[in-house]
Length: 103
Image (tube, rainbow, N blue to C red; front, side, top):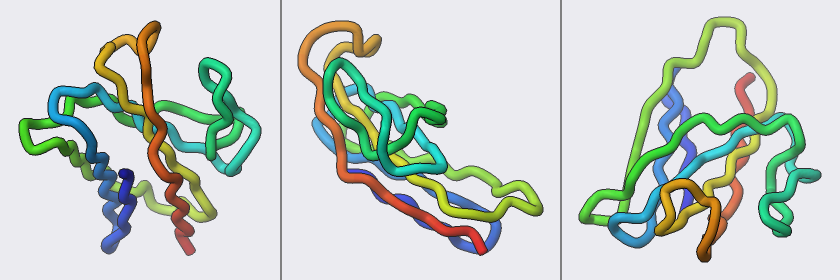
């Protein structure tokens, strides 16, 4: 699962899954149009990977980011998880999408 939360000028992204998996979280300004290894994503082709991490023994990883002043708009996020830290081979899973609007 993926959770994106804004509090004040801070964005926290939390991904959960199987302990030891590698997670990569992507963000974009649109919610469709991108694909990875043949699977459609809930982010667009302008995606950027904003976080990679290894899930803890409890099966989660969280990171907070400062939102730069003047940032506005809607952002979409989705995470992929895999036992292969490179995501090059083997199975992977996609999380739910998350949408945040910064007024």
